[in-house]
Image (cartoon, rainbow, N blue to C red):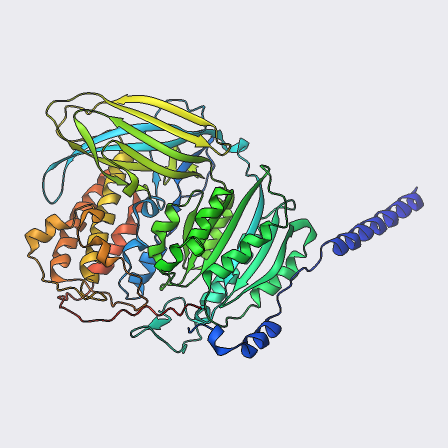
Length: 589
């Protein structure tokens, strides 16, 4: 018997060794990029062809019975926070309402109602006195709920193409601007910190670890040209360890050609048959500053918009404090697109561990909410990247993605509408929602909502928290507008007195006449500045914020409070008229 067991054991070991060898044969190192050859080719090229050069919620993750939903577009405000921490003035779109909402969990107002559909909106109302103007304000929140049980949620198989910027600026530190002093390149001196390239490659390796054997992955690299580094092949057939080593060994070089990189990424999809069984996604990582020329049909954002019509969606990942977050507006308007900014590869890995399947799986498209009322109009929309597409009667959202649901609260699962009362009296507001699923099937849903006669009230903690966070974002955006007017833009700026400032700070930013002028594409950094007027305003708002935070009993709001405290530590400075030049340098072939 012992002899028989010994023979069987030897046979089993031999069989396993054979299987291992066969697996090694099938799992090939299909890396194609040769940096030495590419670099030599670049040196030999004609000179004319070479261009010049969230905080995470700290609650423990405990899966709930059903998933939630959150809007696409910006999924964090890390770039905003990182700029402040490093002494730079953030850009206007580094903080968005939907990005800041996605840092938090919300009571969506569903209550005891049962959701059995793909998407079930729930509505809550509130009335309050504005903390500065003392005017009465009306709010309506849209809770984003889904009837999909977590145990039943499963993403599609994935055709994933990673497009990575390997241009020279990726060798700079994450915490500094690569182009500065009127657009001139800054020499890299501090080698003690991780470079943007290191953070990017570590983030890609973390992302690839979440792929399954029947997923496909391909990799494209670009500087002033584009290079296919790895064909789009099944993960099972690729030597994962060898590919990871190749990625981590990448070095930066050359200029930047975003559209060439994206076009090469699209070519990889030509090698496979696109079916409904697969989600097709490009993950585009760059530290660069795409300009308005990239909106053309044959350039980066135009290409991404056209690709979405074919079912190829895009995730943009920004690396470094100098990443142009102004592109968020354009990313947000692209169907199935989302945006993350990476400030730490370790933090990004934690995000992926929880949310990778969610970030690559759009579920709801073309969401439209129609408000039918003779008493109220939509005055502003917070938490929808398509706010500009909204009118007094209609709110639009391009895409909803699945989201974490914890203890009955959903991460980023809310959109907030500020309503304007246009007639006396009170009446029902009829709300009709329509949307399509990933297969193009249409759905609709109608409900009535009424404001309570109370002078001030909040239906639940979710809408109260959303109002407080939207106040924070509004004030931050208006501060950035006023501060940037005295930095990069040649605008005569006269400081207004504190009373006027206290009214101006709560204006919905897109409604300010100066708003379009501030949204420039400059590379130059601006030093972090807080005027005396804004110091006083932040102090007033901080007292209000602490009071509301105490009422909500929500420690996650320390994220915003810590930013307010950092800004209040700045030495007050007045803004003067500062002359500057157009510092965007872009050489087109």
